[in-house]
Image 1 (tube, chains in turn yellow, cyan):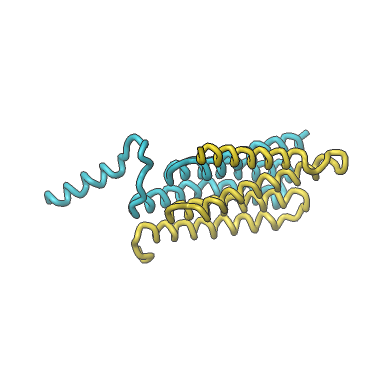
Image 2 (tube, rainbow over the protein chains, first blue to last red; image 1 turned 60 degrees about the horizontal axis):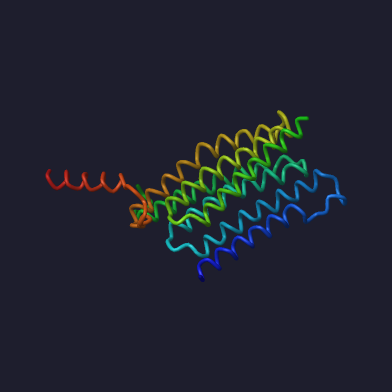
Length: 120
Length: 117
């Protein structure tokens, strides 16, 4: 019973977030490009909240490493979406640098999970 | 016209991202979570970057977006493979309903051969 109640509560929260994403900025106020960019940011923030939940809750260290990797890839997506309305070319530079740094960090953490040293 | 195609690419990428992260929360096991989330989120982010390239055309930021797509496709499977190998070696159990574990069998046969030698 308790398990089914928790499942229903999670479903309600996800449906509420979807409805909030679709209907929050009223479509009559702004033009549709800025509204759609707002919704892109909301959806990416929702993905980051899911990743942070797994980092907090993960039973093993491998779960946390996985979600840190996913968070790094999502931040590249954030930088790409930020590059659309501003028109500055250097946001995507931040994305490339972040992807490189996230890759190196994930390889180092995987080596740490294997229980070996960094020298091989 | 090309703006609308770019928005369609970005929306498809966001849907891939969202379902990948939902799999990260919902699935029961480290390996299931890894295989759901890494592929979906990599493809979704590549789709968002391709939408940015369609917006900008062959300018500085567009070519950098293509470079970032190549870089992500090259590095994300490598890091996922390293995480899976590290998790298996560090002793994370599989889900109790999973069917087979070929890597464990390979490691056991390797250990037997070493003992014979």
